[in-house]
Length: 70
Image 1 (cartoon, rainbow, N blue to C red):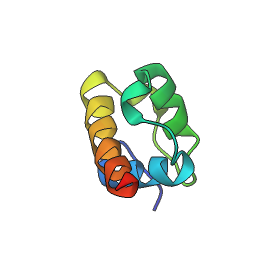
Image 2 (tube, rainbow, N blue to C red):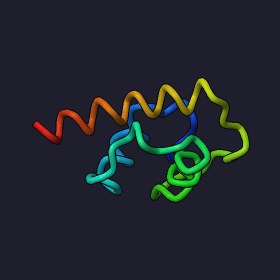
Image 3 (spheres, helix red, strand yellow):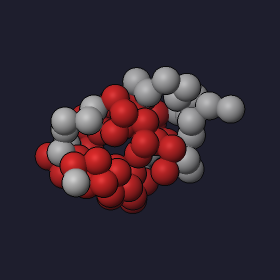
Image 4 (tube, one colour):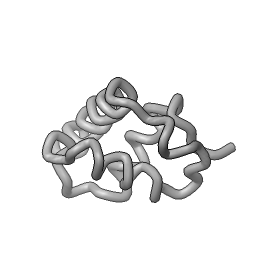
């Protein structure tokens, strides 16, 4: 099964794997949406995103990022 907007944790893990040196808080939502669409296995309609979904993904990615920095 491919990634969809509801797969917040899996998306966050994928973003951390693809971009381990990027601080998620420095990524604008437009860029974040593009990064998500380029993840392996992405299947959802990129235009179905909204601010709440992107913020949830960004916060989950931040958690992954911090875990990997320590």
